[in-house]
Length: 156
Image 1 (cartoon, rainbow, N blue to C red):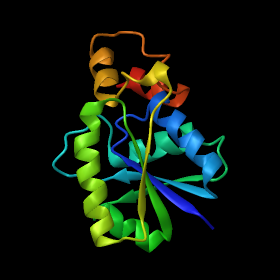
Image 2 (cartoon, rainbow, N blue to C red):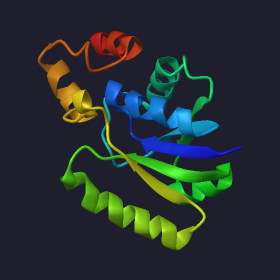
Image 3 (cartoon, one colour):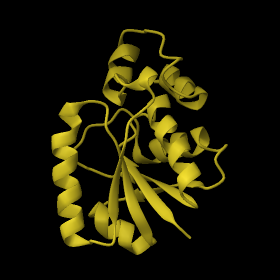
Image 4 (cartoon, one colour):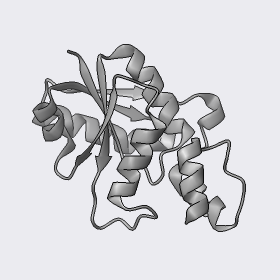
């Protein structure tokens, strides 16, 4: 079985994330949406809420599962038998950091490749930080997030 990881904080998961996940699901037998657990990062949603929102938002994709990872991502990939880590690139500014991470991951586990994917152009500017900022001002974010996330944001 060909598995790929798609890691992120997903605070919250957006339609941009789902765009990349959906396309990745066509290329791999299984996609593990990997919730990166970082205790130093201040999040709007708890870990449990983020896992539940991602799982509910991705329920239409039978080969996509959601798991948590609190250690090194490349080690988690090896433990899960994943052959690839998928990373989204929105702009050239994302590339520098992502390339460094990909090279370090390859140094640690050369059997795990990193794949860079561009989001659909309608999501090129979208990220979770923007969604959280917009919701603070009661802006309409319905075109940026799936329905379960929209409900949860309104509840916050």
